[in-house]
Length: 168
Image (cartoon, rainbow, N blue to C red):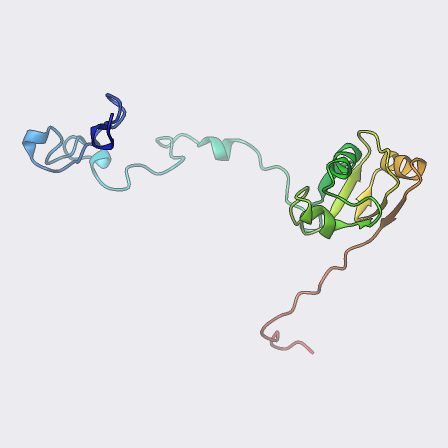
């Protein structure tokens, strides 16, 4: 077999249909859309329109809201921390903080920090600095002889580009 003899498998490269290329193509003139009417025009249909019947999105009640003050944490378990220490991704002697976890590829950067969960066992004596931790996680870290520091991330004030007219 030579490079110039290579061919794709039978039926793997299907030729796409080009519409509006003459009546001999089978998809010429009206391009398979039939004659006149809403379906032959551009735009086709209004999304969610059910022919005058009350649409589903209006039949169902409104519910819930998005809390702008909610905190979104990246989570990490004790088992993950221990496996990272065992595989030498994290140094147990150094302080393990958000930057160290990002550098080890264990979490992606989040707005509100990292929260430590208590699943798994921790054998190493570690010093952790995280945004939050469960009671079982704190207990397990202290039982292993380590320490845990919980910090509160500062909320940066919103800087307005233009002053509000009439405001002092």
